[in-house]
Image (tube, rainbow over all chains, first blue to last red):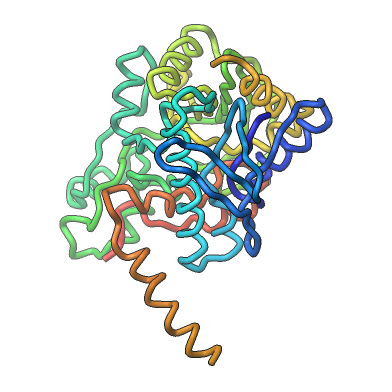
Length: 291
Length: 53
């Protein structure tokens, strides 16, 4: 039996449960909803799990940190609850070293974006050229160049450098936080979702610097990147402990593919729908494999 | 009585959120923008690149 754990509003988990049922794959959800949650007891230190009064011995686990509940209800308690359940499941993983767990080595590990880009470059991937800085004076001197800025830890959109500077007080020489300031890259953006040995590549068509600014942007299934890019992408995923992940790539002025980032908990339901549920099926297949 | 209960619970929640046990504990806050086309909730992205005072 596969255990799928996370938020009740996370469509990746709910569609995986539905697909597992359709395929006859034994699966169980451990889903925490906005107003309902299961009854769980985890024995310490032996790691035995009881869910709603039933002893569970799953053969594999996929756990996702729930961000959807907090989107629906912004109260701090909701985000704290999601973290509580995620941390509980991380503990369950740690207490059961023999359990097949998707992305086991990466769970709970915070990957610094600079560290990931440095690792990617060492593995042969092209990464954006630029700096991380809060030096507003130096940035103002370059604001007419083809540069963009984005928050170091994510969470905000990539914008033209001039726009990011306009958000800061004219008299300030140094910004409150360092940010990425880097070369402007070009679309269409490629999203490569890696599921074990399989790759699902989509091309996203938008004129926006950051595709999240145009949530209705059209996309198409595309050819996978050439092996010279795909192979180091797989190596990067492996080095980060990721069996399921998604890489974002754009092109530089000469047309070379550039890795923007590797997402450890990818959102892919729109792409999954576009390829007939093949990504979800691949995830279920991966959970059924020895790992 | 109901009002009293609410007030007594609020500080506990606040304390839970206000004291990260280690750097990165509040990383989940930055994960609240699904990077997927078609999701209206992406519009919540508004964090300034160079931060805020």
